[in-house]
Amino acid sequence: MALSRLTSRSNTITRPFSAVFSRLISTDTTPITIETSLPFTAHLCDPPSRSVESSSQELLNFFRTMALMRRMEIAADSLYKAKLIRGFCHLYDGQEAVAIGMEAAITKKDAIITAYRDHCIFLGRGGSLHEVFSELMGRQDGCSRGKGGSMHFYKKESSFYGGHGIVGAQVPLGVGIAFAQKYSKEEAVTFAMYGDGAANQGQLFEALNMAALWDLPAILVCENNHYGMGTAEWRAAKSPSYYKRGDYVPGLKVDGMDAFAVKQACKFAKEHALEKGPIILEMDTYRYHGHSMSDPGSTYRTRDEISGVRQERDPIERIKKLVLAHDLATEKELKDMEKEIRKEVDDAIAKAKDCPMPEPSELFTNVYVKGYGTETFGADRKEVKAVFP
Image (tube, rainbow, N blue to C red; front, top):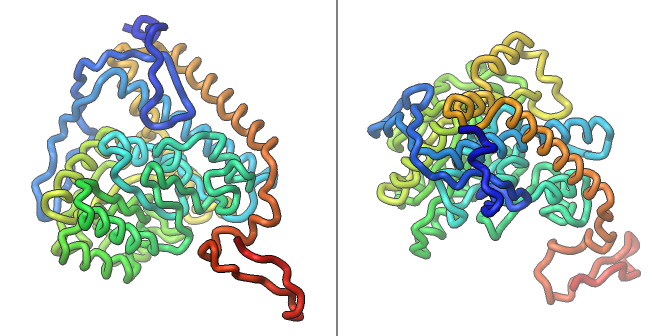
């Protein structure tokens, strides 16, 4: 049964992962059982089942959302090269399965905090393309009002707390959010995400120790893309088994290129964290771009390595094969969907370009607590330049 036969014009479903998109897709929720590509490897816990329950609706949503993320990041690459995006810019293409699988296992009450490779996590939390490109280009409509840029996306109403530029510093903040969740009896968890390059940071272990002492609902997610900037993991870590790094804290190694493995692992981790406290998830993933836009990504690894991962492990191709295998869409229908995505991205970019830059007065907002009458002076300390609200 192809997509055209599953589609019903009487049912418009807003995608659960992004408020910007609505699509006429199947409402068929008949269970489809999918087996993960690889078994889970566990530390101090029993691994979850490899059999993951899904549906035709979820499969099509996975394909569309991941294709959207990929297209968005490729467009950001072009905008950066055209000097419409300035400063730092770290792209997520190749790692989309982590964002989409995690989102499928949790709710918006569950918090996420991550590092600077944050565009797709924000989109998964319900952010819009317009907010993404506006923020990347420093415009008023950006998710951080154009003041954060690529590394500082934020969406508090969906429990997304950034977007952080200091390597590893988001993990103690995430454990703090988990502390607040437990203190408030919210029955929610926090996913604190970091890369293999940040896995050796001392503050990570300090935060993990506190999370274990207090049985906090904290899930530490190591997105192991195998290169910390330009340094291979084996050059930086004596023990690159990051899921075991918690020692006394359980861990799970997951195929981070398999969206359903990520979904199953995150569901398992949430249940564990609510009942028993922290757990570490190591997502074995891969980034196609360099560390940032200033890194060509080909001086410390071969092009054959990159193309080999694309051919054998690409997360979108894996979902595409499942969609075709379950006869949910034809090749042509999926190509049409990709064309539609390209147009939506192009339209969002055009709209963001028309959006104005922040007013100069915005330079002084979100710095001090309101109502304190703080004043700024010129270099001579005589003339008052501004009074903060």
